[in-house]
View 1 (cartoon, rainbow, N blue to C red):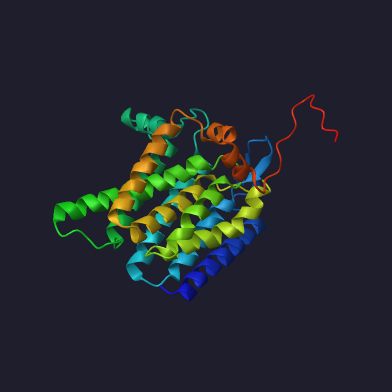
View 2: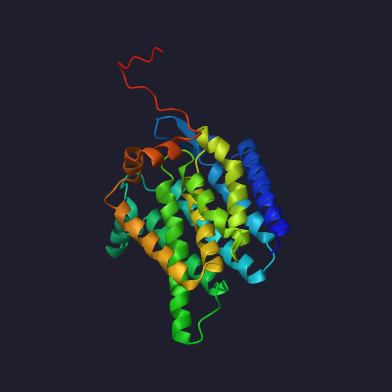
Amino acid sequence: MSVRRRAVVAVVAGIATAVARGGLDWQPPGGAATWTRTNHRGEPVSLLEGPAVTVGLLAGVLVGGDARATAATAVAVVGGGAFGLVDDLREDSATRTKGLRGHLGALAHGRLTTGGLKVLGIGASALVAAALAPPAGGAASRPASRAADTLASAALVAGTANLFNLLDLRPGRALKVASVVAAPLVATGGGAAAAAVLGAASTAVEADLAESDMLGDSGANALGAALGTALVLGAPRPLRLGALAAVVGLTLVSERVSFTRVIERTPVLREIDAWGRRPAAPRAGTDTTP
């Protein structure tokens, strides 16, 4: 894919994200209250950014060129966005089942939560995407090796989708990480997916940092699924397996360790994470006089 085509993908993704967000704001399905949540400051924030980013990613990859890569990324993005949206809008607030372990535990006991449905749905769409994708470095020759490659790629797509949902706990965080990961992938076989991520993120980040919008499960899952597919399409097998190990490791760590606490205790990460965001409100009784 040419540099010009990658640029077109990014521009289309950015414009489509803006148009979709404007249209949703003009007439939110079910009314604005359906999409309003409370953020970490206790302030109202809109979930409409998530569907808008999903639409932007999809529009971008559809002008990417290669048919198999386009189909794989589109399936992954739609699966992540759609099943994330179900969890956003239909989550059972009474049980408050949290984390991958919690949802899988509920499934093991015969109870299907919206989070469990999301795990199954994104897993299935990731498997289809991995089967459609022409992996970087060519396909393995033996059927068993091809099957193992497909399963590993599916796990990478689904795992990355989940990981970005875990990152979406503070304004701009998931979008910043997505942009950093996507930038080097633009020059690979996953360039269309990576360029779409950059385009959609560049449009969404202003409202996200202003804390009027948030990605929610829909936007974060779609973003992560697009990046996972970009890795499948553009990274050689050793790098894909390394990325999968990192994603699985971080997901397991997240069950016991708060990413936010780690970031806040690490000066460099704390500064990058806070860039562009409103400063934290002063604690009660704190003297803010210059």
